Length: 445
Image (tube, rainbow, N blue to C red):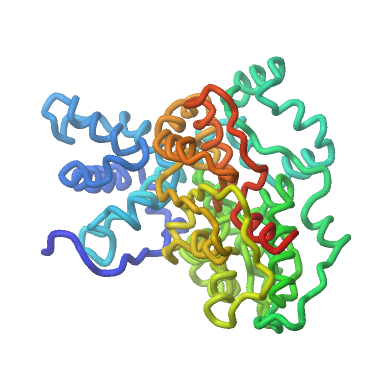
Protein backbone atom coordinates (compact mmCIF):
# COMPACT_ATOMS: atom_id res chain seq x y z
CA UNK A 1 0.00 0.00 0.00
CA UNK A 2 1.33 3.43 -0.95
CA UNK A 3 0.89 6.61 1.05
CA UNK A 4 -0.88 8.83 -1.44
CA UNK A 5 -0.60 8.70 -5.20
CA UNK A 6 1.15 10.58 -7.96
CA UNK A 7 -1.00 8.95 -10.64
CA UNK A 8 -3.48 11.02 -12.62
CA UNK A 9 -6.89 10.87 -10.94
CA UNK A 10 -9.62 8.84 -12.61
CA UNK A 11 -13.31 8.68 -11.79
CA UNK A 12 -15.59 5.69 -11.87
CA UNK A 13 -19.10 5.88 -13.36
CA UNK A 14 -21.84 6.80 -10.90
CA UNK A 15 -23.69 3.53 -10.21
CA UNK A 16 -27.04 5.30 -9.72
CA UNK A 17 -29.14 2.72 -11.61
CA UNK A 18 -28.09 -0.07 -9.26
CA UNK A 19 -30.50 -0.53 -6.33
CA UNK A 20 -27.52 -1.11 -4.03
CA UNK A 21 -26.57 2.53 -4.62
CA UNK A 22 -29.60 3.53 -2.53
CA UNK A 23 -28.95 1.14 0.38
CA UNK A 24 -28.76 3.39 3.45
CA UNK A 25 -26.70 0.96 5.50
CA UNK A 26 -24.18 0.49 2.71
CA UNK A 27 -23.95 4.25 2.30
CA UNK A 28 -23.34 4.72 6.03
CA UNK A 29 -20.56 2.13 5.98
CA UNK A 30 -18.92 3.85 3.00
CA UNK A 31 -19.23 7.28 4.58
CA UNK A 32 -17.55 6.02 7.74
CA UNK A 33 -14.76 4.42 5.71
CA UNK A 34 -14.09 7.61 3.78
CA UNK A 35 -14.60 10.00 6.69
CA UNK A 36 -12.07 8.05 8.73
CA UNK A 37 -9.52 8.42 5.93
CA UNK A 38 -10.27 12.17 5.75
CA UNK A 39 -9.93 12.43 9.54
CA UNK A 40 -6.47 10.90 9.39
CA UNK A 41 -5.31 13.10 6.51
CA UNK A 42 -6.93 16.57 6.79
CA UNK A 43 -5.18 18.07 3.77
CA UNK A 44 -8.53 19.47 2.65
CA UNK A 45 -9.20 21.53 5.78
CA UNK A 46 -9.04 24.83 3.90
CA UNK A 47 -11.45 24.02 1.09
CA UNK A 48 -15.24 24.19 1.50
CA UNK A 49 -17.06 24.15 4.83
CA UNK A 50 -17.72 20.39 4.65
CA UNK A 51 -14.31 19.49 5.99
CA UNK A 52 -14.20 21.86 8.98
CA UNK A 53 -17.65 20.59 9.90
CA UNK A 54 -16.50 16.98 9.64
CA UNK A 55 -13.32 17.50 11.63
CA UNK A 56 -15.10 19.51 14.34
CA UNK A 57 -17.71 16.76 14.55
CA UNK A 58 -15.04 14.16 15.16
CA UNK A 59 -12.86 16.25 17.45
CA UNK A 60 -15.80 17.17 19.68
CA UNK A 61 -17.06 13.58 19.97
CA UNK A 62 -16.62 11.53 23.13
CA UNK A 63 -13.63 9.55 21.88
CA UNK A 64 -12.26 12.14 19.45
CA UNK A 65 -12.66 9.49 16.76
CA UNK A 66 -15.37 8.61 14.27
CA UNK A 67 -16.67 5.67 16.30
CA UNK A 68 -18.53 7.97 18.72
CA UNK A 69 -20.08 10.19 16.01
CA UNK A 70 -23.75 9.55 15.32
CA UNK A 71 -24.55 9.00 11.64
CA UNK A 72 -27.46 11.44 11.93
CA UNK A 73 -24.85 14.18 12.46
CA UNK A 74 -23.37 13.61 9.00
CA UNK A 75 -26.04 15.66 7.24
CA UNK A 76 -24.50 19.12 7.89
CA UNK A 77 -21.27 17.82 6.34
CA UNK A 78 -23.18 16.73 3.24
CA UNK A 79 -25.18 19.96 3.06
CA UNK A 80 -21.98 22.05 3.02
CA UNK A 81 -20.56 20.30 -0.05
CA UNK A 82 -20.99 22.35 -3.24
CA UNK A 83 -19.80 19.54 -5.58
CA UNK A 84 -16.98 21.78 -6.79
CA UNK A 85 -14.61 18.78 -7.15
CA UNK A 86 -11.63 20.72 -5.81
CA UNK A 87 -10.94 18.12 -3.11
CA UNK A 88 -10.92 15.35 -5.70
CA UNK A 89 -8.68 17.14 -8.19
CA UNK A 90 -6.35 19.31 -6.13
CA UNK A 91 -6.03 17.95 -2.61
CA UNK A 92 -6.90 14.32 -2.07
CA UNK A 93 -4.02 11.83 -2.45
CA UNK A 94 -6.36 8.85 -2.19
CA UNK A 95 -8.54 9.23 -5.28
CA UNK A 96 -8.64 6.39 -7.84
CA UNK A 97 -6.48 4.67 -8.98
CA UNK A 98 -5.27 4.62 -5.35
CA UNK A 99 -6.67 1.58 -3.60
CA UNK A 100 -8.51 3.72 -1.03
CA UNK A 101 -10.79 4.72 -3.95
CA UNK A 102 -11.91 7.97 -2.35
CA UNK A 103 -14.33 10.24 -4.24
CA UNK A 104 -15.76 12.66 -1.68
CA UNK A 105 -18.02 14.69 -4.03
CA UNK A 106 -19.67 11.60 -5.48
CA UNK A 107 -20.16 10.24 -1.98
CA UNK A 108 -22.06 13.43 -1.14
CA UNK A 109 -24.02 12.99 -4.38
CA UNK A 110 -25.00 9.46 -3.34
CA UNK A 111 -26.29 10.73 0.02
CA UNK A 112 -28.38 13.37 -1.73
CA UNK A 113 -29.68 10.85 -4.26
CA UNK A 114 -31.00 8.73 -1.39
CA UNK A 115 -32.58 11.83 0.15
CA UNK A 116 -34.18 12.74 -3.19
CA UNK A 117 -35.60 9.23 -3.64
CA UNK A 118 -37.05 9.40 -0.13
CA UNK A 119 -38.79 12.67 -0.99
CA UNK A 120 -36.71 14.68 1.48
CA UNK A 121 -35.87 17.48 -0.96
CA UNK A 122 -38.00 20.48 -0.02
CA UNK A 123 -40.63 21.86 -2.41
CA UNK A 124 -39.04 25.32 -2.47
CA UNK A 125 -35.61 23.88 -3.22
CA UNK A 126 -37.03 21.91 -6.14
CA UNK A 127 -38.62 25.03 -7.59
CA UNK A 128 -35.31 26.89 -7.49
CA UNK A 129 -33.66 24.15 -9.57
CA UNK A 130 -36.14 24.55 -12.44
CA UNK A 131 -33.87 26.99 -14.25
CA UNK A 132 -35.43 26.59 -17.69
CA UNK A 133 -38.96 27.24 -16.48
CA UNK A 134 -37.83 30.05 -14.20
CA UNK A 135 -35.70 31.52 -16.95
CA UNK A 136 -38.52 31.54 -19.49
CA UNK A 137 -40.92 33.17 -17.03
CA UNK A 138 -38.29 35.62 -15.79
CA UNK A 139 -37.39 36.72 -19.31
CA UNK A 140 -41.05 37.15 -20.27
CA UNK A 141 -41.56 39.61 -17.42
CA UNK A 142 -37.98 40.76 -16.86
CA UNK A 143 -38.70 44.25 -15.43
CA UNK A 144 -41.05 42.84 -12.79
CA UNK A 145 -38.84 39.83 -12.02
CA UNK A 146 -35.75 42.01 -11.64
CA UNK A 147 -37.62 44.46 -9.44
CA UNK A 148 -38.79 41.63 -7.20
CA UNK A 149 -35.36 40.00 -6.95
CA UNK A 150 -33.42 43.19 -6.18
CA UNK A 151 -31.75 43.30 -2.77
CA UNK A 152 -33.17 46.81 -2.44
CA UNK A 153 -36.70 45.45 -2.49
CA UNK A 154 -37.62 45.26 1.18
CA UNK A 155 -41.01 43.69 0.50
CA UNK A 156 -40.37 40.79 -1.87
CA UNK A 157 -36.90 39.75 -0.67
CA UNK A 158 -37.94 39.09 2.95
CA UNK A 159 -40.86 37.11 1.51
CA UNK A 160 -38.48 35.08 -0.70
CA UNK A 161 -36.30 34.44 2.32
CA UNK A 162 -39.24 33.11 4.30
CA UNK A 163 -40.77 30.97 1.56
CA UNK A 164 -37.77 29.88 -0.52
CA UNK A 165 -34.94 30.15 2.00
CA UNK A 166 -32.99 32.58 -0.24
CA UNK A 167 -31.07 35.08 1.86
CA UNK A 168 -32.51 38.58 1.40
CA UNK A 169 -29.01 40.03 1.04
CA UNK A 170 -27.72 37.60 -1.59
CA UNK A 171 -27.35 39.09 -5.07
CA UNK A 172 -29.45 37.20 -7.61
CA UNK A 173 -28.89 37.14 -11.38
CA UNK A 174 -31.04 39.48 -13.40
CA UNK A 175 -33.23 38.26 -16.25
CA UNK A 176 -32.79 39.49 -19.81
CA UNK A 177 -35.89 40.56 -21.69
CA UNK A 178 -34.46 39.02 -24.87
CA UNK A 179 -32.72 35.65 -24.64
CA UNK A 180 -29.39 34.81 -26.26
CA UNK A 181 -31.11 32.49 -28.73
CA UNK A 182 -33.44 35.33 -29.76
CA UNK A 183 -30.57 37.78 -30.09
CA UNK A 184 -28.56 35.27 -32.13
CA UNK A 185 -31.44 34.75 -34.56
CA UNK A 186 -31.82 38.50 -35.03
CA UNK A 187 -28.16 39.24 -35.73
CA UNK A 188 -25.39 37.07 -37.18
CA UNK A 189 -21.85 38.52 -37.07
CA UNK A 190 -19.86 38.59 -40.29
CA UNK A 191 -17.14 35.94 -40.33
CA UNK A 192 -13.62 37.21 -41.03
CA UNK A 193 -12.49 35.12 -44.01
CA UNK A 194 -8.92 36.43 -43.65
CA UNK A 195 -8.46 35.17 -40.08
CA UNK A 196 -5.89 32.39 -39.58
CA UNK A 197 -8.56 30.11 -38.08
CA UNK A 198 -11.09 30.66 -40.88
CA UNK A 199 -12.91 27.42 -41.62
CA UNK A 200 -13.59 26.45 -38.04
CA UNK A 201 -17.21 25.94 -37.02
CA UNK A 202 -18.68 25.96 -33.52
CA UNK A 203 -22.01 25.66 -31.77
CA UNK A 204 -22.36 27.88 -28.73
CA UNK A 205 -24.30 25.99 -26.07
CA UNK A 206 -26.07 28.98 -24.57
CA UNK A 207 -26.48 27.51 -21.04
CA UNK A 208 -29.43 28.60 -18.90
CA UNK A 209 -27.43 31.50 -17.45
CA UNK A 210 -26.16 32.71 -20.81
CA UNK A 211 -29.56 32.35 -22.44
CA UNK A 212 -31.86 33.84 -19.82
CA UNK A 213 -29.67 35.98 -17.56
CA UNK A 214 -26.64 37.37 -19.39
CA UNK A 215 -26.86 37.03 -23.18
CA UNK A 216 -24.06 39.60 -23.53
CA UNK A 217 -21.53 36.86 -22.73
CA UNK A 218 -22.72 34.85 -25.71
CA UNK A 219 -22.83 37.92 -27.96
CA UNK A 220 -19.24 38.75 -27.00
CA UNK A 221 -18.19 35.16 -27.68
CA UNK A 222 -19.79 35.23 -31.14
CA UNK A 223 -18.08 38.54 -31.98
CA UNK A 224 -14.65 37.26 -30.95
CA UNK A 225 -15.14 33.97 -32.79
CA UNK A 226 -16.40 35.66 -35.97
CA UNK A 227 -13.39 37.99 -35.90
CA UNK A 228 -11.25 34.87 -35.74
CA UNK A 229 -12.96 33.28 -38.72
CA UNK A 230 -15.22 30.89 -36.82
CA UNK A 231 -18.75 30.30 -38.07
CA UNK A 232 -21.11 29.94 -35.10
CA UNK A 233 -24.61 28.80 -34.27
CA UNK A 234 -26.33 29.31 -30.92
CA UNK A 235 -28.25 26.29 -29.62
CA UNK A 236 -30.08 25.73 -26.36
CA UNK A 237 -31.96 22.42 -25.99
CA UNK A 238 -32.12 22.53 -22.17
CA UNK A 239 -30.18 23.14 -18.96
CA UNK A 240 -27.18 20.91 -18.30
CA UNK A 241 -28.80 19.68 -15.08
CA UNK A 242 -26.22 20.99 -12.62
CA UNK A 243 -29.00 22.34 -10.31
CA UNK A 244 -30.59 18.89 -10.27
CA UNK A 245 -27.23 17.21 -9.69
CA UNK A 246 -26.71 19.38 -6.61
CA UNK A 247 -29.97 17.95 -5.21
CA UNK A 248 -29.22 14.33 -6.08
CA UNK A 249 -31.80 14.05 -8.86
CA UNK A 250 -29.48 12.00 -11.07
CA UNK A 251 -32.27 10.64 -13.26
CA UNK A 252 -33.21 14.19 -14.26
CA UNK A 253 -29.59 14.89 -15.17
CA UNK A 254 -29.50 11.75 -17.32
CA UNK A 255 -32.62 12.94 -19.17
CA UNK A 256 -31.05 16.35 -19.84
CA UNK A 257 -27.85 14.70 -21.02
CA UNK A 258 -29.74 12.54 -23.52
CA UNK A 259 -31.78 15.51 -24.78
CA UNK A 260 -28.84 17.85 -25.29
CA UNK A 261 -26.56 15.16 -26.74
CA UNK A 262 -29.21 14.12 -29.27
CA UNK A 263 -29.66 17.71 -30.48
CA UNK A 264 -25.91 18.35 -30.66
CA UNK A 265 -25.14 15.08 -32.50
CA UNK A 266 -25.91 16.37 -36.05
CA UNK A 267 -23.75 19.44 -35.45
CA UNK A 268 -20.86 17.31 -34.23
CA UNK A 269 -21.21 15.06 -37.29
CA UNK A 270 -20.86 18.17 -39.48
CA UNK A 271 -17.58 19.07 -37.77
CA UNK A 272 -18.77 21.70 -35.28
CA UNK A 273 -17.08 22.07 -31.90
CA UNK A 274 -19.42 22.60 -28.94
CA UNK A 275 -18.63 25.61 -26.74
CA UNK A 276 -20.07 26.15 -23.26
CA UNK A 277 -20.24 29.73 -22.00
CA UNK A 278 -19.79 28.94 -18.30
CA UNK A 279 -17.46 26.31 -16.79
CA UNK A 280 -20.09 24.54 -14.69
CA UNK A 281 -21.90 23.51 -17.85
CA UNK A 282 -18.69 22.57 -19.66
CA UNK A 283 -17.79 20.38 -16.69
CA UNK A 284 -21.17 18.64 -16.87
CA UNK A 285 -20.89 17.96 -20.61
CA UNK A 286 -17.27 16.84 -20.48
CA UNK A 287 -17.04 14.89 -17.25
CA UNK A 288 -20.24 14.38 -15.25
CA UNK A 289 -22.56 13.24 -18.04
CA UNK A 290 -20.23 10.46 -19.28
CA UNK A 291 -20.05 9.16 -15.69
CA UNK A 292 -23.85 9.20 -15.32
CA UNK A 293 -24.76 7.70 -18.72
CA UNK A 294 -21.54 5.91 -19.73
CA UNK A 295 -23.26 3.78 -22.38
CA UNK A 296 -24.72 6.70 -24.35
CA UNK A 297 -22.58 7.11 -27.48
CA UNK A 298 -23.99 10.58 -28.23
CA UNK A 299 -23.03 11.79 -24.75
CA UNK A 300 -19.53 10.41 -25.21
CA UNK A 301 -19.16 12.14 -28.59
CA UNK A 302 -20.44 15.39 -27.09
CA UNK A 303 -17.94 15.19 -24.23
CA UNK A 304 -15.10 14.79 -26.72
CA UNK A 305 -16.30 17.74 -28.83
CA UNK A 306 -16.91 20.17 -25.95
CA UNK A 307 -14.70 23.14 -25.01
CA UNK A 308 -15.02 25.84 -22.41
CA UNK A 309 -15.17 29.11 -24.41
CA UNK A 310 -11.84 30.38 -23.04
CA UNK A 311 -10.23 27.01 -23.69
CA UNK A 312 -11.36 27.18 -27.32
CA UNK A 313 -9.92 30.65 -27.87
CA UNK A 314 -6.56 29.43 -26.59
CA UNK A 315 -6.82 26.39 -28.88
CA UNK A 316 -7.13 28.82 -31.80
CA UNK A 317 -4.25 30.95 -30.52
CA UNK A 318 -1.93 27.96 -30.24
CA UNK A 319 -2.87 26.17 -33.46
CA UNK A 320 -3.57 28.93 -35.98
CA UNK A 321 -2.95 32.18 -34.13
CA UNK A 322 -5.59 34.77 -33.29
CA UNK A 323 -6.77 37.44 -35.68
CA UNK A 324 -5.15 40.85 -35.72
CA UNK A 325 -6.73 43.88 -34.16
CA UNK A 326 -6.41 43.21 -30.43
CA UNK A 327 -5.74 46.51 -28.63
CA UNK A 328 -4.98 47.08 -24.97
CA UNK A 329 -7.84 47.68 -22.54
CA UNK A 330 -7.31 50.36 -19.92
CA UNK A 331 -7.83 49.84 -16.22
CA UNK A 332 -6.77 46.23 -15.92
CA UNK A 333 -8.72 43.30 -14.50
CA UNK A 334 -8.86 41.00 -11.53
CA UNK A 335 -9.61 37.54 -12.88
CA UNK A 336 -11.08 34.86 -10.64
CA UNK A 337 -10.43 31.32 -11.86
CA UNK A 338 -13.68 29.49 -11.20
CA UNK A 339 -13.54 26.16 -9.39
CA UNK A 340 -15.44 24.39 -12.19
CA UNK A 341 -12.87 25.70 -14.67
CA UNK A 342 -10.08 24.38 -12.47
CA UNK A 343 -11.93 21.07 -12.18
CA UNK A 344 -11.65 20.64 -15.96
CA UNK A 345 -7.90 20.32 -15.41
CA UNK A 346 -6.92 22.33 -18.50
CA UNK A 347 -4.84 25.02 -16.82
CA UNK A 348 -5.45 28.76 -16.51
CA UNK A 349 -7.11 29.22 -19.88
CA UNK A 350 -8.97 32.40 -18.89
CA UNK A 351 -5.70 34.00 -17.82
CA UNK A 352 -3.94 32.82 -20.97
CA UNK A 353 -6.72 34.34 -23.06
CA UNK A 354 -6.55 37.74 -21.36
CA UNK A 355 -2.76 37.75 -21.74
CA UNK A 356 -3.36 37.83 -25.49
CA UNK A 357 -4.27 41.49 -24.94
CA UNK A 358 -1.09 43.59 -25.22
CA UNK A 359 0.11 45.46 -22.12
CA UNK A 360 -2.96 44.39 -20.18
CA UNK A 361 -2.76 44.72 -16.40
CA UNK A 362 -4.00 41.36 -15.11
CA UNK A 363 -4.23 40.01 -11.57
CA UNK A 364 -5.21 36.34 -11.24
CA UNK A 365 -6.85 34.77 -8.19
CA UNK A 366 -6.97 30.97 -8.07
CA UNK A 367 -9.06 30.38 -4.98
CA UNK A 368 -12.68 29.53 -4.14
CA UNK A 369 -14.99 32.54 -4.15
CA UNK A 370 -17.37 30.75 -1.79
CA UNK A 371 -20.50 31.00 -3.91
CA UNK A 372 -21.01 27.32 -4.75
CA UNK A 373 -23.88 27.67 -7.21
CA UNK A 374 -27.27 27.84 -5.52
CA UNK A 375 -25.65 26.90 -2.18
CA UNK A 376 -24.26 30.37 -1.51
CA UNK A 377 -27.50 32.29 -1.92
CA UNK A 378 -29.41 30.35 0.74
CA UNK A 379 -30.08 31.91 4.14
CA UNK A 380 -28.35 29.05 5.97
CA UNK A 381 -25.20 29.48 3.87
CA UNK A 382 -24.85 33.08 2.69
CA UNK A 383 -22.72 34.39 5.54
CA UNK A 384 -20.52 31.28 5.42
CA UNK A 385 -20.17 31.76 1.66
CA UNK A 386 -18.97 35.33 2.17
CA UNK A 387 -16.52 34.12 4.83
CA UNK A 388 -15.10 31.45 2.52
CA UNK A 389 -14.75 33.99 -0.28
CA UNK A 390 -13.33 36.81 1.85
CA UNK A 391 -9.67 36.22 0.84
CA UNK A 392 -10.72 36.54 -2.82
CA UNK A 393 -12.78 39.67 -2.15
CA UNK A 394 -9.92 41.17 -0.13
CA UNK A 395 -7.45 40.66 -3.00
CA UNK A 396 -9.88 42.09 -5.55
CA UNK A 397 -10.56 45.13 -3.36
CA UNK A 398 -6.84 45.72 -2.87
CA UNK A 399 -6.13 45.53 -6.62
CA UNK A 400 -8.97 47.97 -7.46
CA UNK A 401 -8.94 47.15 -11.18
CA UNK A 402 -11.49 48.48 -13.65
CA UNK A 403 -12.79 44.94 -14.27
CA UNK A 404 -13.57 42.04 -11.97
CA UNK A 405 -14.40 38.94 -14.02
CA UNK A 406 -14.74 35.21 -13.63
CA UNK A 407 -15.58 32.27 -15.87
CA UNK A 408 -18.45 31.87 -13.40
CA UNK A 409 -20.38 35.18 -13.45
CA UNK A 410 -22.34 34.13 -10.34
CA UNK A 411 -19.08 33.83 -8.43
CA UNK A 412 -18.10 37.23 -9.79
CA UNK A 413 -21.23 38.85 -8.36
CA UNK A 414 -20.56 37.13 -5.05
CA UNK A 415 -17.02 38.56 -5.04
CA UNK A 416 -18.45 42.05 -5.62
CA UNK A 417 -20.69 41.60 -2.59
CA UNK A 418 -17.65 40.54 -0.55
CA UNK A 419 -15.77 43.63 -1.74
CA UNK A 420 -18.70 45.80 -0.68
CA UNK A 421 -18.59 44.26 2.79
CA UNK A 422 -14.89 45.11 3.05
CA UNK A 423 -15.02 48.68 1.69
CA UNK A 424 -18.50 49.63 2.87
CA UNK A 425 -19.56 50.65 -0.63
CA UNK A 426 -20.24 48.97 -3.95
CA UNK A 427 -17.05 48.60 -6.01
CA UNK A 428 -16.76 50.82 -9.09
CA UNK A 429 -16.10 48.26 -11.82
CA UNK A 430 -17.18 47.69 -15.40
CA UNK A 431 -20.32 45.61 -15.91
CA UNK A 432 -18.43 42.93 -17.87
CA UNK A 433 -18.72 39.69 -15.90
CA UNK A 434 -16.87 37.16 -18.07
CA UNK A 435 -13.30 37.33 -19.45
CA UNK A 436 -14.52 36.82 -23.04
CA UNK A 437 -16.23 40.20 -22.75
CA UNK A 438 -12.88 41.88 -22.11
CA UNK A 439 -11.37 40.22 -25.18
CA UNK A 440 -14.35 41.43 -27.21
CA UNK A 441 -13.67 44.93 -25.85
CA UNK A 442 -10.02 44.57 -26.95
CA UNK A 443 -11.26 43.86 -30.47
CA UNK A 444 -13.27 47.08 -30.35
CA UNK A 445 -16.75 45.63 -29.76
